[in-house]
Length: 543
Image 1 (cartoon, helix red, strand yellow):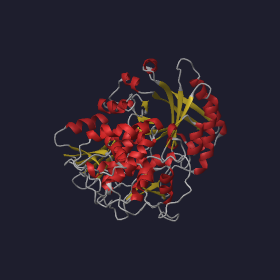
Image 2: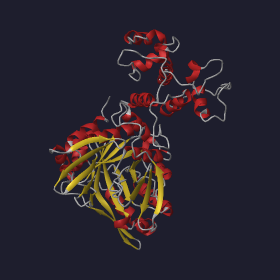
Image 3: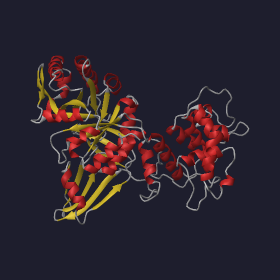
Image 4: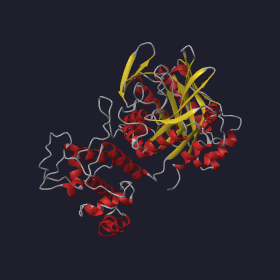
């Protein structure tokens, strides 16, 4: 979980990764600048950028979002369908008269139509897709989508009786203006606090919906649907760190002990450098007492271990796997799982030999031990076959961080880049096998009086926490990064830090929850403050 060795250059909304001296480049799109027309204090800014991270909304080429633009019916149906997948019992043969097959929105409108979502808005066989959508229509479509997840009995109970109780509570001054056939569905969104009135007590049913309001509505809908879904919590344990508290183990489903490293000597020779700390018995006992799985992490990277040479060396792989199996089968440790964390495989030619290594590990330990594979984002590292690794492993940890780029000032894990990396992984790996890796760290840039800039990749967490509390420090949550931005000045110059604090960790936890992932993997537990751990463990509590 110590991803290193890449550089990035920020150009507008494109990041270009340049590795080493070969100047090979790979570009990916991600919203790394604020939209020019969305102020940070905008009441819907967080919702907009959360949906950007999930790939649900985008801006325009000129850098604007156009938050005040009215949304069309077809545009909202697309947003809604990306958030709640329409479920059709059977395909309808009758077509909508005004939605041709070559229309940009045909596919998503057809899905919603087959699921019955649009029945309330169709007149004379027409949907009027380009018409500005009204608030009552948005509420009705959203309410219908919410009821889709209920049993037939629950749905009928709401439509026959329960909506009337919600209607009595909703004291809108303009309630009588809500279309009577839409009212039961409109009141569903009110009851679930997804859509409510303005500060003057009005619902404004006939008002068109803006892109800003649509983002807020869909964000609340996603939050409502995912709230209460428990996230699995895996926590890496390394000896270093200022916050060593083994009582935290009870709040995590898995403790991953960083005690082993690949040792490759070349020419068919490899072994496992297994070095548990002096208090290993107490640590394993604490994990047992907390009911947590005990996982052995095996680390290696291209810089230290010549991974490219190792993974193509069949004899060395065999020696390594045998040494690993001996440790995993040793009853005095009782490891439940092994996490293979071999980092930095760039050439695609290494996919198959690395995958073969994972097959060999699985074959050697599968009867007694579960298997986790740790992978980097796929933008540049071509040596990881996401699909096959997802099939072989019981879980996959995605290290969606270390996007840090010294020259452009890009910090480790902006939420929009994290979301982009997760979406790429989900194209190959099932969500119920995927863990979002979150790294507790900071990056610091110091500008001296003469203009020279010094970069510190990983300043001490304890020092950062002390700095935040110091007089003269400005600390804010920055969008669209969803990271803590810290600035201060001293005799060395002016300082900028990007920090993964409790609030930014919460944003990533919610992203994992909203995207349906199995859980998160935190690097590492001894770096986390009490506030961090309170946030993290809350996602694993019964709701």
